[in-house]
Length: 224
Image (cartoon, rainbow, N blue to C red):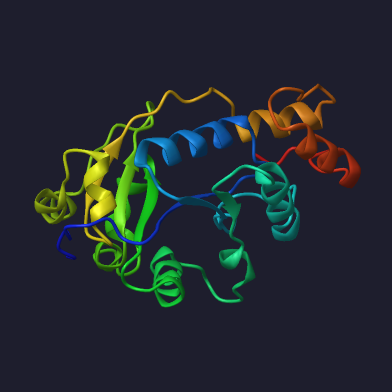
């Protein structure tokens, strides 16, 4: 665990991952609120590979990254990071954090954002304790998935908890914080179903994303 320092690191970065199939206003509103509440300089939206038990994607990796990039273009402090989509081997969060540390250095405050549904299973992730040596970890509460940590994870996390988001800013890594947001009830699954049945998705996604979907004929068949 990295000990707190007495001054804020030169810069701070948060990582917000997801399938983003497609990215929608719920994702984007959460990204803006995370950036504001944590007070980070940058927030990277990191499209992930589709989980193996999901059906064939309606949008491929290149298309999903293109939609995320278009959605955040011009939004100060938000950017798309496609590194996980470019790997030929299986992609693990710990590898992403190791890459970012190599690129950004040891002084930067890096924070990885996880939903409570994901963190409930973090004990099954590759090298999960190393996440805390590489980054701060923030768990985003999701109403349908109460935080129910494995006992070993709970014991590991207990001494790493911080009381406020501001305390993360003075740590390069090692802190743990729980965050609640007012989340918009927008679902990528619902968007795909609407598109497959010919219904409108206006106001659910940015216009630039809707235009990209229409131009490339995406989601004409629904794979939930």
